[in-house]
Amino acid sequence: MTEKEPSRYTEGAMILPAIVARRACRSFKPDAVPPQLIEELIKAAQFAPTAHNRRSVECIVVTDQKTKQAIHDALVPQDFVAQAPVIIVPVSDTKIASKPREDLSLATENIWLQATHLQLGCVWKHVHDEKELQKIRSLLNIPEHCLVINVIPIGFPAEMPPPHTDAEFDTKRIHNEQW
Ligand SMILES: Cc1cc2nc3c(=O)[nH]c(=O)nc-3n(C[C@H](O)[C@H](O)[C@H](O)COP(=O)(O)O)c2cc1C
Image 1 (tube, rainbow, N blue to C red):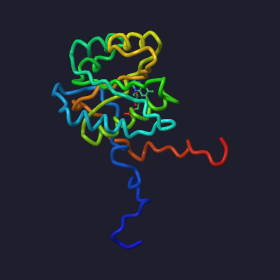
Image 2 (cartoon, rainbow, N blue to C red; image 1 turned 135 degrees about the vertical axis):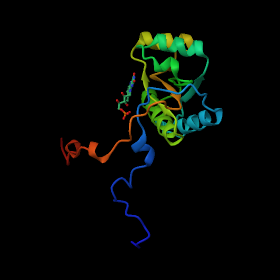
Image 3 (spheres, protein in one colour; image 1 turned 120 degrees about the horizontal axis):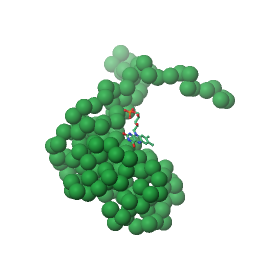
Image 4 (cartoon, rainbow, N blue to C red; image 1 turned 60 degrees about the horizontal axis):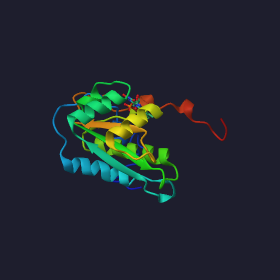
């Protein structure tokens, strides 16, 4: 290794900056999110791996205040859901998907990381049960055979928790060969 090449093993160097900075953002500025940035987020979702490469995930982009409020009301209440300027709802068509929950989870993480890269804030807002799912389906006209496991409120952060640090890295959660 020459002097110019940074070591891959320098503290933090092997982790993407967005992985470190990605946090749950629950407080948003009212400013609208430009459509190009929303498109970047959805591109990230579409580049996420899917089981059997079925590419089952589609995204609904919600900016209408009444709809955002209705999404808030359908779920365990958390104010930021209605306050975020945009909500992305990832949807997996279970007629296409092999592992819809896994596909949706990975798409969500990609959106979260891309949002971090774009200095946007977002969070996974969980859809807890069949009752909540049915409410979201009916609100957004989503067919019965499509699954939603979360909604993702997004905006420019008003407050953002600090990036993760190596102080949180817990070597006790590593097991060699066996539990
Ligand atoms: C499966 C799952 C469900 C979550 N549901 C919610 C939720 O309903 N509301 C919320 O505010 N955060 C939710 N979160 C965000 C977590 O609380 C958050 O990621 C966790 O506290 C770690 O903080 P960090 O994302 O800032 O590292 C969820 C995260 C995951 C992975």
